[in-house]
Image (tube, rainbow, N blue to C red):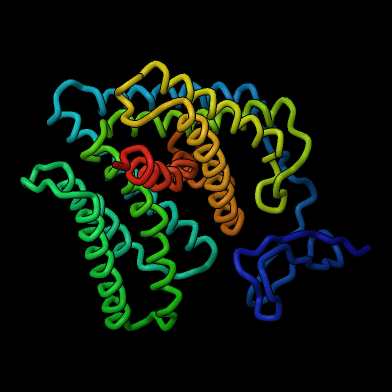
Length: 346
């Protein structure tokens, strides 16, 4: 009797055009099919996988992890000692950029693509550290935001040139365009976008520390609203081929909860948020929540390409660094641009 088993390959054999599940026909339970690409043995019984945790348990884990992370963030931003606050802030930024970039390059490698991981991480950490010293005033430099952007652009030009030189000296990598592209995209996706948090924190025309706290709070309340409402009421899928769990009801919950959080934070902080009023609070609540959902979907796309559920396992109920940052990465430049060109416009 013919028995059919399914074997998942980490890479396709030469005559298969994509990733996926391959079938092997075995004529009896004890036979083995051997080829240059595949060795599969028939297993009469499969070990049942553990049932996934309930949504309530996942939500509780997320809540507890979020409380711990919020304690660290607030302690870093409002320690009362500027030197300590700046030092902890730099350490957090470096850790998020470095480990987040390692996770992204890990996804790239799981997909079977090539990247210059070490050079990318070095460039990302250099970008974060040098921008911090430039903006914080430690070096005695107090420049306008435009000058800071020029400084950052200069670093990126040097990084791209360094990438090309790195490919010049490579003796085994013949996929130069691929390696340069994936490495550069990783730098832009994680540390470059994350770097806008520093630009907000040290923004000269406003109390940037409160705006950092504001945009993180509004973004994370968007995540919470999307998860809670989507879990309870979600029926209509947004883009199931990318993220089957995300629904339009969850998106509506994200916008509603995020906007409410924006209004409440703006009300209780008052003049500490330079230029803020209820109209801006509503606009930012809608913009940040929408951008947060898009950022989440972008990371879901990367994870689905790599065949993983979470980018890492650092945070219970959340996942890895990228799972923590996905909704923040695109909101950071959005908040910075709105702060610079709308809220503090002369």
